[in-house]
Length: 137
Image 1: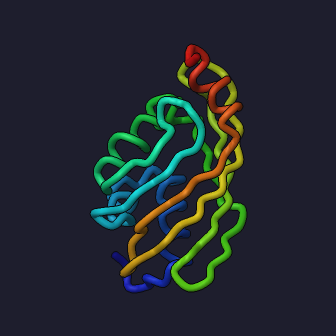
Image 2 (image 1 turned 135 degrees about the horizontal axis):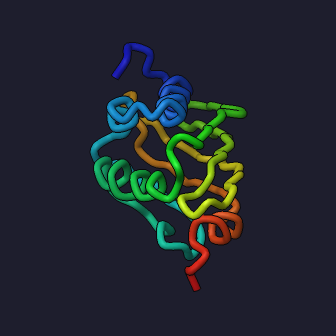
């Protein structure tokens, strides 16, 4: 982890790594025992536990639904207080099925010892369902 490990910088570095597709920085951003909660009743919904599960299974599966060359992640705003960071970002891409994906997301991050310990994500799951999981009942 870089020397600048204040919570806000950790989250900014993580989102920028996602935008750049920098897998080593993405993986290094999480604590071994991190959790990520994704809302709704979609296939990725629920709480994901452990850095490798979050990076490989949750984020990896999400990435597999999109054409990599079309993915654009933009950090809109970051607010931090203590170990809590709230980040808003936009995700734009084309799905592997050819549908346009445009979503706004907010994550409530908790940072511990310079790494992300937990994330609660809030996003438009109806849009995600329509574009990314059209066969989901």
